[in-house]
Amino acid sequence: MNTLNNLDIDKSATIIDLNCKGDLRRRLLDLGLVKGTNIKAVFKSPIGNPIAYEIRGTTIALRKEDSKLINIKL
Image 1: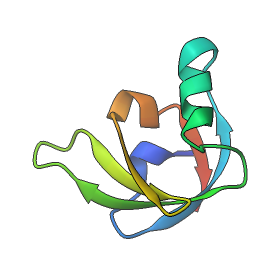
Image 2 (image 1 turned 90 degrees about the vertical axis):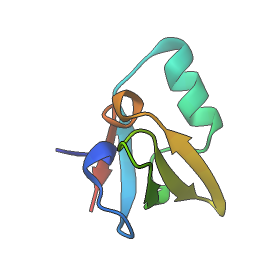
Image 3 (image 1 turned 135 degrees about the horizontal axis):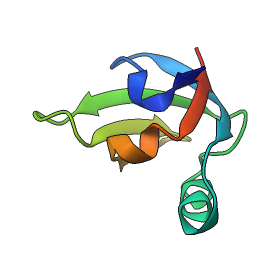
């Protein structure tokens, strides 16, 4: 299974599932990270963490430890 943290810059994918519960799951869902949504990696910070993603016309930044919990389909 592919996870969001492995998505290359300028590549797109579709969110399949979130591998977390509780407050973190609620936060990710509130950001629009729901099943079937397209997401694109747009920028990686110089040290590689966080990574900026474009989702639903908005750019968000996620830490690697959070993006590892998001399953995607390339």
